[in-house]
Amino acid sequence: MIVFDNICFSYGTRQVLKDISFSIESNERVAILGGSGEGKTTILKLIVGLIKPDSGRIGIDKVDITDKTEDELREVRKKFSIVFQEGALFDSLNVKENVAFCLREYTKMSEEEIEEKVGKLLRKVGVEQAMQLMPDELSGGMHRRVAVARSLAVYEPRMFLYDEPTAGLDPVNAENICNLIVDLSKGGIGHVVVTHKVVDALRVVDRFMFLQNGVMIFDGNSYGLMHSAIPEIQIFISELNFNSKENRQFV
Ligand SMILES: Nc1ncnc2c1ncn2[C@@H]1O[C@H](COP(=O)(O)OP(=O)(O)O)[C@@H](O)[C@H]1O
Ligand SMILES: [Mg+2]
Image (cartoon, rainbow, N blue to C red; front, side, top):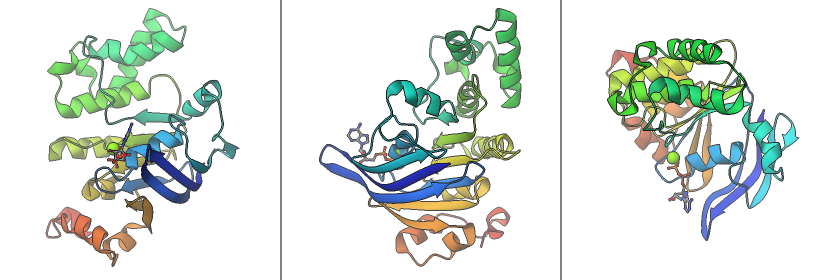
């Protein structure tokens, strides 16, 4: 579904991606790993056409989107449910209004239909009790859940894109978000999770890519990742606590 064909991308004179190629099917569960500033968010932005590559082609569902106009890209974006890292909620709106926002903006749903849909979405992510709360009254984990509900509001996505979904969360909330990500993908809707946290990636995907110095230095399964001889990958993996029961299964 997503094809990157020899993609190069720079911000000004800083080249971030150097000749990146990969393809991801819509039912796959993939992590893009790498350190801060390696270009992970940039890849997500390229997938949905928010930025354009310097060279190379990007295909979504066999359609070349590289030179599409903003209008045409809107159709492409409907295929994805995107939770960006900076996808903060609107501070001045309560949870219900945050989720209802897109419904009001893009659909002709009645008040009752909106109420019902928002309730359903919040139940799906497990925060229906927070309907009337303001964003600053939410825990980090709840905040992230509401952001996921909002991203699901309008369209039935063909694929989920998550940017650092567990960043800044305590371990319990991080696990809850991972469980949510896995649950939402049941039924064959895949996801691409951008993260620097290997432990969370192991919970939610089967395929791992590792971005380093603008190049994809690894693309494989968890066994390949855990046994990689690449020093940078070993450093990421060394953060895992191998003694914990949870992680032993991956070794
Ligand atoms: N709008 C921008 N203008 C200039 N440089 C940027 C911009 N966005 C990101 N960068 C730089 O590009 C590099 C990759 O950014 P990003 O894709 O956000 O990395 P990651 O998500 O892996 O942390 C970083 O060095 C970052 O500072
Ligand atoms: Mg990022």
